[in-house]
Image (spheres, rainbow, N blue to C red):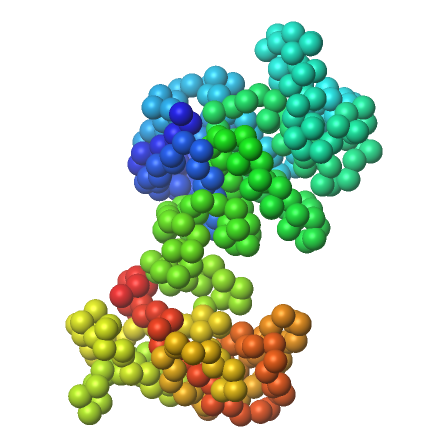
Length: 368
């Protein structure tokens, strides 16, 4: 078993700054958890507390049921892959990978066996005699992973290990890491600010902001059912559109009326949920992919027509990203079918999908 538990964990520095506040997370054995959020949100500090590289101000961390607050990093049965890879430049790849085992007094023969097996798993057998300076960024990343694998730890910790790679290699490395997790069969805790990494790699993702855990769930659930405005806006590229609005009744129908002139009727199945917020300020949110070109509206949606003018058009090949403005100047973004022909200045009756909108309380910013 390689379970990990954060129990009311807080990290406060001497100057009073709180980096992490009351963090509660339970990781099951063999889970791939991604801590994601903007710079300064506390994700790396949380990882470093788990590794024993940062002291915990209050709360407890457990690995396999053992409280490890006062356990040294070397005795926690964890392996960490850093953003910088931290390879020894004077050592060969093989020596870098086997160094931690050598420090533990593992016999040379056993070290060679473990290093060879890890190198084969990562496809770097031909690099074992090279020095780090002779390797590409992707190869160095594999060596850093190999150094962690040979230790056969209970938990793998990774602090933005792909951030130094170019865009194409990052996509490849994401797939390789996911496959590695399946092969190794142990618990992974991965830190990133890249939402694409979080969405594609994690069995669950934990979204953090200002030291506070905002939401933890499967990537799909977090994306489709965000708990608040921050989570909704952080995940997704382009991010969710937000409109200040109020819930008002017109001719007996509960409507969402935005400051920009959008009027959206509340679907019958959501009436009971929103009724108590009638007359109160709310935030209407809809993702760019929930907005359709009038000629390419798919079946099975509940559309409402919104008139807007195209401002900027980005042809991506597999999709068209269009920046629109309403009559009052309010801007929003739509991700349209690649067949859609849109020119700047063109006015369209866009179709907003009422099965895919979100409503947030303006004051608390929590989902309604």
